[in-house]
Image 1 (cartoon, helix red, strand yellow):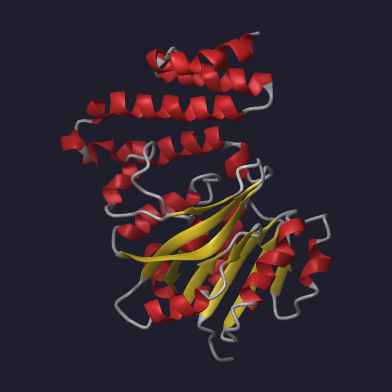
Image 2 (cartoon, rainbow, N blue to C red; image 1 turned 90 degrees about the horizontal axis):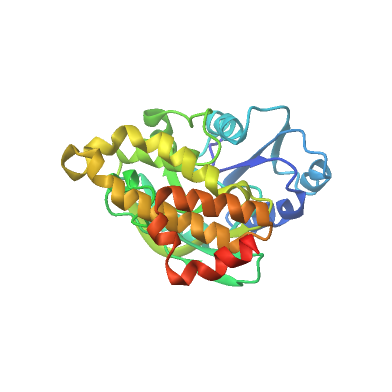
Length: 291
């Protein structure tokens, strides 16, 4: 069988609400040279029936050990030159494959990334989230905003996988950023500067629901590398890290609808920087939580 140009890999678990849009966005690229592999963790929400509407999909439904394991099965099975990792609640923007074909026409280009259109479900509407990546060492400062690599808008050649290996299956929230870290050691990332994907920032998304766990996992991934920046003095990073983390937890506290969740995030913010929590702008939050 002739190898396709694009291999789209989708891990899936009870995301039937979004899956039709996900698969349809690939079909709507009007590029016949692709395969779409969906590895599903025995969903019970009608996923199987939805996928049956698309006979071209290579669908496997079996128990897995989490998202990384599902994606790794796709990476191992993919036959295409360009690897596309598209979660079941995301989509590709119209014309994305045409843009990618042009970018990868240069054989020296191994990895590309672009912007995403984010659709929020909390009343914020839609925004264009611009990608940003200049230096791989900026990944180590995970608490800041120097790096913005949106996972569904990052694409790489199959040879990159052969060189770097698979995703770490012990990670569940920041597995993509750890993978970008390893890839960037040997391969340059090329910025497309166009919207390539659509992200549904829906409340059941684990990175929306458990953002605090995302922060904890990024700490675990990147803390061993703190000595690579700021002249090898990890302690020099502490004030910056604590201030940024406190700000992140305050944002979570403000957004929380559940009082217990708001209190937990406020306490986390306090642990990082009491001075930031006690700023006048946050007094309304404190009164709301403890009233």
